[in-house]
Amino acid sequence: MKIYGINGSPRPKGSTARLLKWAMEGVENACAGAETEIIDLYRLSYTGCKSCFACKKKDGPFYGRCGAKDELSPLLEKLAQADGIIFGSPIYFMDLSGQMRSFLERLLFPYLVYDGKGTSIAPKRMPTAFFYAMNVTEAQAEQWGLPQRLSLMERFVGNILSTPQTLWCYDTLQFSDYSEYVAPCFDEKAKQRRREEFFPLDLRKAFEIGRHMALDGLKDPSAEGDACGCGHDHEHGHHGHHHGACGYGHDHGHDHHHGHDHGHDHGACGCGHDHHDRG
Image (cartoon, rainbow, N blue to C red; front, side, top):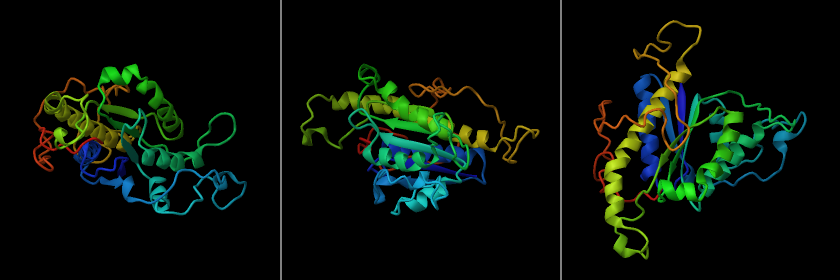
């Protein structure tokens, strides 16, 4: 089993990256033999879809595959045979980051058939999820219609690969020292309190999404018991698809039983000292 985390943030150690890391550890917790990898899109040089239609040409060499050649091409080949993908993006101007949007154009469009039915010719159906990190509050996101806006891409992913789970991480920190920047609308102390209280819960939700993604992907409906021999009960609880509910919104324990120290860069599990997390 191979599950990928796609980091659409320019920050390899920001909030989005940390959510993805916990999700990958959830995958590994579900089955020791699973392979995981986080891809930082901002380290790759590529463009969005160029509308060359090579992926749609009858009997063409690239039918059903992106014909563009750049640093994204090898990744697209790997993802075609993935067993699960988690897309993580900061929210910029109430939308996905530019790198994530361009990546999704290249990933999804070759699999979409122009038959009026939205038929998918993706090589595999696979579990998916979206992690969103943003500096706005939940109320502000609702005011600006962010859930409805992002649901459009979620629908495309659902049609082509599988209906994604979602995790929403609100009101993140932007700066290591707010006094160095012109940003009078933010209350640094309030943001730090928010991070200390809620970010550990978001990390735990990410872990559980990764864990259940692995269990769901490994389970053989025709088999009895444990499909991968990993020794876990393969229960499949309801996964909420709105505002990070994920079916785990009430699991608020701060103890992380999978046995890893998750304090990356000044403090475990978002203690408020790692401030480089606009994304």
